[in-house]
Length: 199
Image (cartoon, rainbow, N blue to C red; front, top):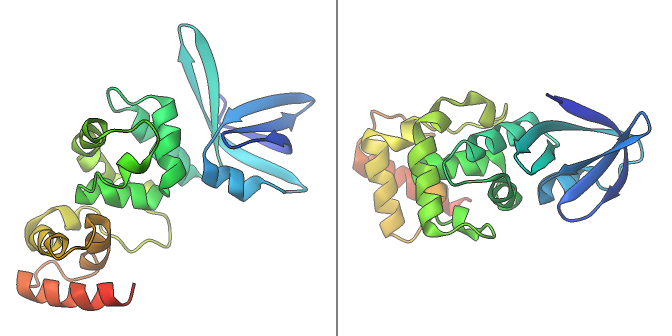
């Protein structure tokens, strides 16, 4: 297993980054966000990698952060979701917004990815909801979203109410997650509306 590659970026396009290590160029399939982060770097760059081996193909997938790599591994663990779909989803979502979408049941953001339909998005949410709630690596050091809290109790009711009012599930979950879980649904909605007004 190749954990990471470090070297000079010698070529990239919208979904491939080639990193030269010891005279060998490693072609890594990657996301738009990783391309944006490493493009133009003059020194060495590091990509954290996942090797996917199939009967007729061996491919390397590389990511600028461990959060993105962990999100990719979760995605391809879902039945019917291959590496291309994983890359497509992480090209329209950050690892944090992906985790929040799964935790809050927001399939809309997932269907923005090329080749990902509603059925696939629903399967991702269904299969990963519990895993994402426990996957602290996806949260990132600066995230204050409690993924477990937004999928239970009063929080879920408040999120549903805010969605009815026209907000997306991800937006609603983001503000509700910062409210004490013991708060009443009505108070959560009030505080949520105040929080959404400042986004």
